[in-house]
Image (cartoon, rainbow, N blue to C red):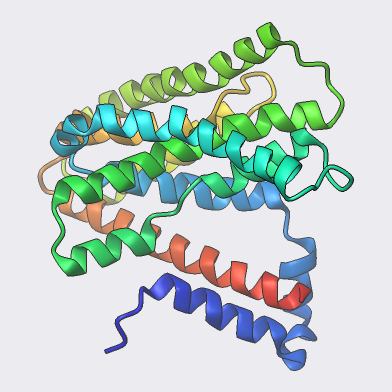
Length: 281
């Protein structure tokens, strides 16, 4: 058996297919690569990936590692973003190509880690559950932090005036509003699940709908808080208390459905990433 995580292999397979001329000329290929809306990609993949990861986490271990997770996901990610921007702007001399704000945008993009391959490798090596939870939990929250920084930097790059006070208010709104909204939807979801008895199909569909509705509402122009942090809060609340609202007959089915959704979403996003890179090169 090849002892390589499947996600890099999917990216390589997509990259190879994207380079092949005959594959590039397929009508469906042009539709996928050139006309796929990035916003649709976020709405389609993010709720599934983030909720599945948060929902399947061990709350007790997550709580024990919470202080370390918060340090890594917030101040350390901000430091990594700023240091990346400083290196690009002053050391690598991108001053004539990119503004400092654009360097911050790039730093926010590459500072958010994806732990899929790392966590899979840790499980194979028999590493402690604390370490795997620390890495996966940090990844859950740093996605939200990176997106908040990215959104603020995008507004600045587009020419919007952003004072220190206004930036702090926007950061607080995005970073605190998301968890509050996620908690509100989590309370509604647990109340609704508590009214359903022994209906695996309905309970599975209800969790799926709430994951996507929470993200969609959070990202609406009138609300405009962090959809990622809202989903994280929703998933963690379901891990801590929401599972008690799921019927005992349906609990296994709900977890299996979400494992399948998470696996399919990871497979698609890594494969499509490889295809797009190969196609444009």
